[in-house]
Length: 155
Image (cartoon, rainbow, N blue to C red; front, side):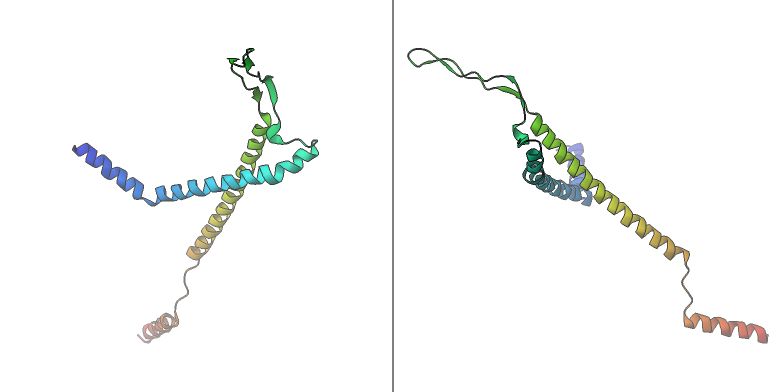
C-alpha cells in the first residue's frame, strides 16, 4: 500500500469514529422509524375519515386511467398470441397521501427544532445572568477585608 492510501484509510477511520457520524447514523435510523410511524398514521388513521368525507374513496385507489388494460389474446387452440398488458394509470391518490406524510413530518421537525432553539436560548440567558453577577465574597474574605482596612487606619 502506498503512503497516500494509508493516509486515506487513517483519515477515513478517524472520520467514521467521530461522534458526529455516529449521531448522524442514529438520526437516520430514528428518522426511518419515525417515517414509518407517520406513514401508518396518515394511511391508517388520517386518510380513512377524509376518504369517507369525500364519498368513501380510498386515496390509494384514486387514479386516472391513461390506457386501459388489454387482456391476453388467444387463438382458437388456446395459445397466447399477444401478451396481456396492464393499465397505465396516474396514481394521484398515492401522491396526495405522500404529500400529507411529508407535511406531518415537516411540522414535527419544525416543532422539534423550535423547542430545541427555545431551550438553547434559555440556557444562553442563564449563562449570561451567571456571567453578569459576580459571586459575593465569602465570610472569610469579608472579615479579612475588614481586618486589612482596620490595620490601614492604625498606621
